[in-house]
Image 1: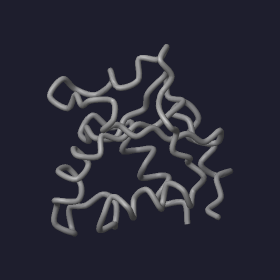
Image 2: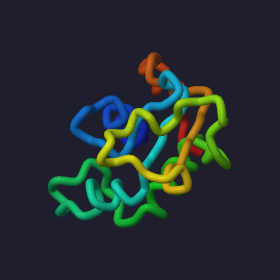
Image 3: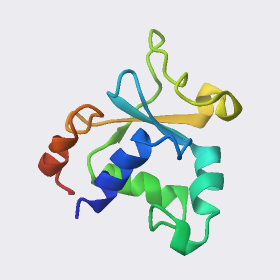
Length: 116
């Protein structure tokens, strides 16, 4: 089921959703966890983008779909600058995920991503 990856790709591209963003020119997905809790998990079920109950479930889905959490972003990157000023968070509150098959500029690769 690739619906999770499709929703993640759309969400990261959307201006409506501020807690998940593409960073480093669309190579990584970054998540502001506190903002995600407010934007997504605090919504009532019919309004939710992802059918998850917790951030742990979200992290688990990312892992199942091959997106690996990075220990921290490289010092040379501008990671985190894509978040709006009001969403700015200390780097420790941002989580960065990477998969060689999941990039902003290549939505067609979603078809090659396989859940484990």
